[in-house]
Structures are given as structure tokens and as C-alpha cells.
Length: 292
Ligand SMILES: CC(C)(COP(=O)(O)OP(=O)(O)OC[C@H]1O[C@@H](n2cnc3c(N)ncnc32)[C@H](O)[C@@H]1OP(=O)(O)O)[C@@H](O)C(=O)NCCC(=O)NCCSC(=O)C[C@H](O)C(=O)O
Ligand SMILES: [Mg+2]
Image (cartoon, rainbow, N blue to C red; front, side, top):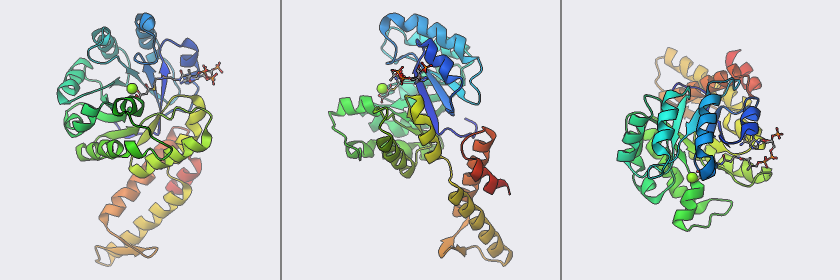
């Protein structure tokens, strides 16, 4: 997938016309029109049609994808066929258990980037092989389903899920693809959302899936480079450039050693900040630093 901010991926039931209209105006980097768990069985065909009709429309700066129903359900084939012929920017497939399913999903998605959900014990065990399948552009953690399957009882620190979270990020990085955190279901618990999002940033996720408009500002802010981070990145790049001009391969900046790997990371920070600015996002101040 192209490099662009994907801090927030907002799910909404494709059967909910009001939510679709609302999503057109929301600051989600990506929108996922859901055909799976958020849609009642009797509504599946109508939701599929609504998703295809909506996906080509104007969602401001948000890119829009479709989450199909999973393998083994009555709807999977029709969902994939509809998503593949639609204007969706990507397809999300739930409950991917292994590389065979991932490869099948890639073939059915008709050339669209595939985001594979890792939300079963088998999926976690096979996450490296799933991430390696050509056409899989990213992994999305499905921690609600995984919690159920594990019979785990995660608290605010999500301790029982951290192994899976790290496996997902590790697999994504090893394969050069994206990794997204699961949803925070306690709508209105702003402190809880902030804590969980900070943890997702620390773990290395690229963004977080969301379920309600009220979650977007906070998650967007926490995944954007802060002005301090942007200023630090600029300073670090300058310090390294100066050292290179003096024939050195390493420099120090703010008391720490700096090598090319730190420069690469700093350049990525500046690029993300710049792209967020182009989206008209929330990090305008960061962009000022990045472009001055
Ligand atoms: C959870 C909700 C059902 C709550 O909906 P509602 O009671 O309507 O909330 P509000 O009254 O607070 O809504 C205020 C307005 O915002 C709009 N709205 C609400 N949610 C969304 C949304 N997700 N996208 C767009 N717009 C939204 C309402 O329509 C109101 O608008 P207005 O009346 O014009 O002011 C609801 O939030 C919801 O359905 N959320 C998404 C649920 C979903 O998609 N679930 C599936 C994905 S999560 C998952 O599957 C987990 C994963 O697989 C795993 O295993 O972990
Ligand atoms: Mg799920």
C-alpha cells in the first residue's frame, strides 16, 4: 500500500446508512465498511449492496475498504466478488487461520491490497507465514475474538494479549507490511482509550482500529508525530549530516549516538508528519516544523 497516514481505521456496519453518511465527514484516515460481525445475518445482502454503492463516494480524505465475511460462512464468495469489483481501496478478511487462506483471499480480492485479521489462536501461530503471502498488505489484530478463543481476561494493561500483539508487529515488520491494533470497546472511557493507544504506539503498531467517532481525535493525535518528535528528527538529521561532512559515520545528538538507522527513522517521522498535514489532519504544528 502507498505510504500515507493510517492512524485510525474506523469500522462501521455497512447496514447503517446514517453511520455511512456520518463517516464521510469524520477525520478517520481509513474507513472500513463492515459486512461481518456488525451486520445481522438477514441484513447481509443489503449491507453488501450498500457497501458497494457507498465506497466510490466522497469520504473526504479517508480511504475506504470493505471487511468481508470469513471463510466457511455463507456470504464469503458473494462478499469477495462484490468487494473486488467495487471501488474499495482495500479488502479486510477476518479470522485468517493460515497462509493458504490468506493466499485464497488475495486471489479473491482481485488485485486489491488485503488486510488480514489475526484473531484466532491458529492465526497467531501462523502469523509469520500469513504476513509473507504476496498481496497481504497489512495485519489487523482482532483482540475481541482472540480474547474469547483464549478464554483470557485482559485488564487495562492487556497482559494476556501482548504476546500476540508483539507477534503481529514482528511479522509485519519482517515482511515489510502494516500492522494495526484492535478496537477499544469502552466508548466514552477516554482515559482508557488513551492508555491503550499509547501502548499500541509503544508496541510499534502503525495505527489502531476504532469503532466510534469519539475515538478518532485522540487516536489520531497519539499516532501523529508530536512537534517535539518532529523537531528532534530534524535536529538528528542535521547532526548526522554535519558528522558525515566531517568524514564520520556516527554522530552524537542530545547525548546519544546517531547512525544511519536513526536517520532513516527520523526521515520517516518527517514524511508521516508531512502527509498528515496534506490530509488536513491534526498535526499542522508538526508539519510546520517538518517543512520550515
Ligand atoms: C457501538 C455503536 C453501535 C454505537 O452506536 P450509537 O448508539 O449510534 O452511538 P452514538 O449515538 O454515540 O453515535 C453518535 C453519532 O455517531 C454515529 N456513529 C456511531 N458509530 C459510528 C461509526 N462507527 N462510524 C460512523 N458513525 C458512527 C451515529 O450514527 C451518530 O450519528 P448522528 O446520529 O448523525 O449524530 C456504533 O458506534 C457502531 O456501530 N460502531 C461500529 C461497530 C462495528 O463496526 N463493529 C465491528 C468492528 S469491531 C470488531 O469486529 C472487532 C474485531 O473483529 C475483533 O475481534 O476484535
Ligand atoms: Mg473479530
